Image: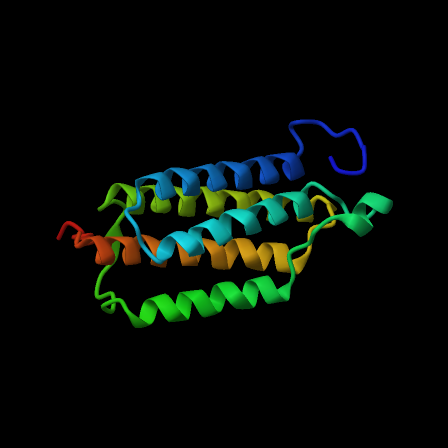
Length: 171
């Protein structure tokens, strides 16, 4: 932990920021598979923001000087995610059904990153419920990021000419 406190590797806070790191790694795989695209800049920006998120989660508010120096996720980060979602959705056909994760390999990894991000959100919520000082902005960021990753997977499929696979529930 930033600030030097000792904490169990089994703590929910550690699990949350470890899971954020896992999501970030999946973004790296998606980037490695994505052909030249304007979406690359957005993915690199998200990777940098995930480092900020990890530092925020790894630095409790009561960590003294480390807490004052730690980068934090704020409402402005959440607002940017929401704007990115809106911007990307404008260029995509409307969804008429649920879709299955997959498509282009980069899109498939973005779907994995989305699921990992949802797990990080659940862990952060659990840590907060256990008394950890995790901000509203961190929880909102994780929630909106998973939505953005879903839209990004669709955007990659759209950009690369790979159709999303609709879910056809059994009748």
